[in-house]
Image (tube, rainbow, N blue to C red):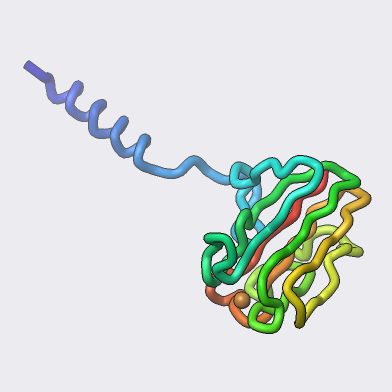
Amino acid sequence: MISRGGLAAVTLTACFLSSEPPEQTPPLNGCAASAFVDGGSATTVTFGGEDGSPLFGYSPACLHVAPGSSVTFSGDFSVHPIAPGASPTETDAGSPQSPIAETVSGSSLTVQFPTAGTFPYFCEMHYAAGMAGVVLVQ
Ligand SMILES: [Cu+2]
């Protein structure tokens, strides 16, 4: 038999487990601290449906690499022009002097990241649909 006190404790525990833990910092371009995947020393970010990437997204959108790494963005830039910085819906611009150059044509862009930093980027056409990402270099 469950006492009234026991039932209340069970209910409180269930509520606690179903809620999200509080974020230490707000996610930038949709990238919470726990969302970053380790890309190693060289990796590719696909987008716009290429190689199974989301049609209006990047894969992986939240990428962690070491300083000195290169990252190749692969997809159709004429459909998904990329720009450095936080999406216009965001307030945190990330680190200054992003090595990601605005690119509006072609299908491949390789970017060297010589120094540590947080380098957000977004699709100028579809950022409102969440097409944005971050390269975290550290
Ligand atoms: Cu796009």
